[in-house]
Every structure is written in structure tokens, then in C-alpha cells.
Image (cartoon, rainbow, N blue to C red; front, side):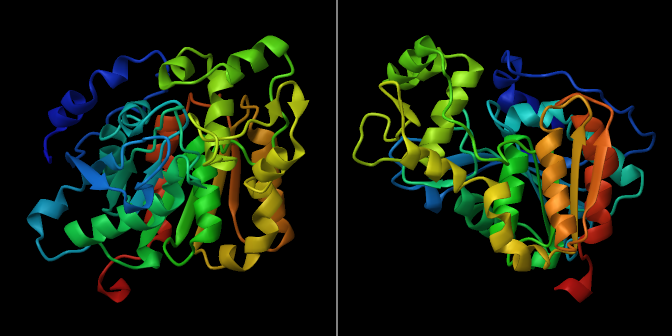
Amino acid sequence: MQTNIHAALTIAIGLALSAPAQVKTEVPPVVPGAKPVTVEHIRVHGTALEGNLEGDDVDRDVFVFLPASYARDKTRRYPVVYALHGYSIGAGQWSQEIHVPQTIEGAFALGAQDMIVVLPDSKTVHNGSMYSSSATTGDFEQFIAHDVVAYMDAHYRTIAGRKSRGLVGHSMGGYGASRIGMKHPDVFGSLYIMSPCCLSPRGAGPADPADQKALEAVKTPADSASLPFRLRTQLASAAAWSPNPKKPPLYFDLPVQNGVVQPDVLAKWAANAPLAFVDQYVRNLREYQGIAIDVGDQDNLRIDAARLHDVLDHYGISNAFEIYSGTHTSAMADRFQNHVLPFFSRNLCSGSKCQ
């Protein structure tokens, strides 16, 4: 399936956009003279997701945004930015929260170089893949770093080299950009980490016996859907970080079982925390042309975001860090247009010298 008009994006994801989880963001004004980008809604097969025990779809929605020049210049190749959505939403809903294509068009009109922007979907049964590698959910880390990138290089006029690929994400997507970025400098050349979640090792979870009972009672996707946000994140984290192929029907272990904390499960969760494993990937991080981190001053995640910045500074790894005025979600659209895309414009390689 492939369409190429603005309206198609709204039609394809319209029902999802009315979901209660959608947040309001400050929308930058339309830039006069901005040229319309082309929106294509495609499906990408995730070889890395095949056989996942959760039954998550291995054919994923992906939204591709092509600059106006793409249709005119049939020989030109472009750098690509891969943008990862957060927890509880998919790529379609996030596209509305960052107000694409308007913000992409605005960035180009304000001077950012033309590039392709790609929003892959990684929503799962429990509302988020954590962009991790798990027998339960499938290997979403490899899905992003290999399957989606390989598809784009095979079907679009990309510059197929790491120096011309950027990776950005917000919240769970910021975690994904951190995790995937540290492990795959052979694929991506610049990183932008927006309000990243989940950087520090997590605790055992809800201490309230009622909450724990509710988690342990979940047996089906419908059961999961009835839980509040904070409890569903526990299920998503367990599916991503403590999979258990021998434990149907959900195929994961919770960090508290029958009221008893499970240290081995917590150790697995800690092993997936970027602030716990970043020291192992210092050499990889030095490979990046540019690294940026930002977070709102009213966002509880600012503490760990600052810690990641401090670690990079400690190792002498060049990175830009900004605490801006805003909440976790209020400035996403403005940041995407006026900070994220200009950052990649400065740092991604374009032109024949990159090919």
C-alpha cells in the first residue's frame, strides 16, 4: 500500500488520532512559502520480528516524508532521518503530535537541507516495544537498525551510508535512540535524543498489593488494555527485558511475583538501562558526527537526561545538551522543526561525496 498526498496520512491513521493518549503540543506557525512534502504510507516486513511469542504484527506501518525536490530531480539521493515514537502511541499518532508534514516543510523552508524523514511504528500488545531485542516481542532493535533501513535503501533514493543516516526519538523513542545508537554506529552517523525515558535501572515496580495483583491477573491483550498507563509500562518492560519462552500466555517474568522481589529479573532490567551499559560503548559513541540531547525543564526525565550528558562529557564525547522551557510533550513540534531537523541538516552528509 502506498499513497502520496497529504490527505492520505490523515485517512490512514485517522481513527488512531482520536485516542485519549494523544497530547497537545505547541505548533510552530506555518512558514510562508514552505513547499509541500510528499507523504507515503507503506508497510515494511520485519524479518527481525518473525516468530515473536506475543503475536505482534511483523508487517509494520511506516510513514515516509519526501522533500519537494525528490519528485523533480530523479537522480538526486538524500540523507535519511529515522524518527522513533514514544510509549503508548504509534507512528501515526506521533506524526500528529510533532505536526508533520507541516514541521518538516517549515524546517526546509527555514534552511534545513532536503532529507527524507521516516517514522516506523513499534507499538505492541502492551503499547510499546522499548526498541529492544526479545523473543517475546521480537527484535525491534534490529527491525529499526536493519529491516527499515534496508527497505528504505532498496526502495528510495537514499544515500546508503552511516554518515547520511540520523536517528532521533522521543521518550521511549529517546531510549531507543540511545540504545540503538550506542550499539549501531555502523548504521547511523548522528543521534538526537529527545526527553529519553528508562535510562536508569528500574526498581521492582508497584509496592501496592492491589497493583501487583492486577498485573499478575493479566492473561490476554484485553486484560492489558484495561490497566492504567503506569501498570501497562510494567508489562511492556517485562516483555522487552525479561522474556520467558517457557511461561505462556504472556511469555515474560515480572520483577515481583507472589509478593516476592525477583533479583534475577531486576538484573535483566538493569542490563537494558543505557546509564548502566553506556561505558561499554564509549568507542562506538566516538564514531558519531553529532550527538544532541534535550529535555523540558518541567519533565521529570531531565535528571537522567542530564546524567547521560554528564557521562558523555566525562569521556570527552562531544554532545549538545539543552534544558528548554516545557513539559515532557509540550514542545515536541517546535523542537522537531527548529532544532531536530536543523541539527541533522548540519551533521548528515549529503551530495555525491557521501555516496
